[in-house]
Each structure stands twice: as structure tokens, then as C-alpha cells.
Amino acid sequence: MAKYRVCMGLAMMPDYDMQKLKEMSQKGWHLSHLSGLLYRLEEGVPHDYDYAVNLESNITSEMLSIYEASGWTPIVAENGYQIFRADAGTTPIFSGLESTESEIEIEMLKNMQMRCVKWTAIVFSLIVVFCVVSQWIDIHQIILLLLLWILVVLFMFTVLPIIGCGISIYRKRKRV
Image (cartoon, rainbow, N blue to C red; front, side, top):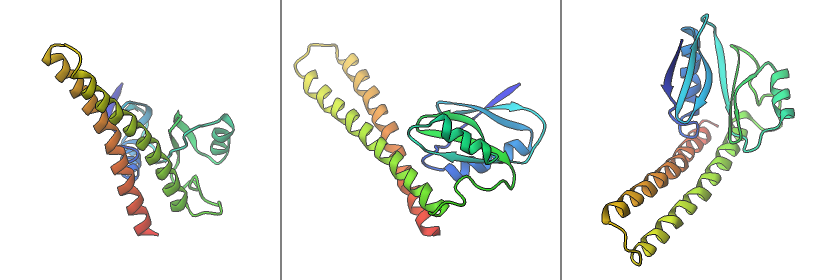
């Protein structure tokens, strides 16, 4: 049996999401997949797992092998975000590196934020082009509004992660 939980945003609240996944595993519901904004949880034996998110834009099998050798199993491994699971108390993913864990997380959040800025610029450009072109094309008003609404929704889905990354960066810097 499976159930789904909403992802609060890996850019906006990664620590919150990882803690919620840990709590769900302790109750016997383990992450198996992330689809859009939904975590898929499979029922199993309760276990105390730690979860960690990595925001690498490009993943490699070598990178995944290093994490696995450290005791972290990749559960979700997509370009742009990866979620790993390990037994509670396993050495954190970024420990032992020259930079502190927070500095690495901040750098990953900045990279994700810049990717979102690029997509926001593209969507905003599409909105501007659409508004200009719609003046010259004779299309029914409802269709124009629907298309504009779709572009605005896309715009919001690119802006919100920028804000979320900024908040997460601020919080992590405040803790350092």
C-alpha cells in the first residue's frame, strides 16, 4: 500500500521535509519516489532513517557510488535534486570535506536559485512576447486569458523556488 504527502519544496524547506520523511519512516512509511510535488511513501516496517537532500544539477554514477559507500542510499536521483536515506546516526553526507556542511548546502541552494532565475527570465519573456503578439492576433478573448493564466502560473512556479532558496540561504547563514 502507498500514500502520498505534499513536498513543501526542496528549495524552500529542505530541513523540514527531511525531518517529516524521518518521522514517517519511524511510523513505517518510507519514501519510494518523488513525483512533481508529491512524495510517494510505501508501507513497511518502522525504522529510524535519516534523510538528506542534495541539489546537484548533474548527477553521475560515480557520485552516487560515493554516497552509497558512505552508507547513504539514493531514493530519488534526478538531475537537480537527489534524496538519500541512511540509518539514523550515519555520518552526514558532507562531513569530512574542507567546507562546512552549511557552506556546501548554501552553495547548492545558490546554484538552484540561479537555475530558477534563468527559468523565470524565460517565462517572463514569454509573457511579454505573448502580450505583444496577442495585440496583433485575432483570437477569442477567453483563449487569450487562458493562455495568459497558464503563463502566469508557470511564472509563479519559477519565482517561488527563488524566494524559498533565498529564505533557506538566509536561515543557514544565520545559524553559521
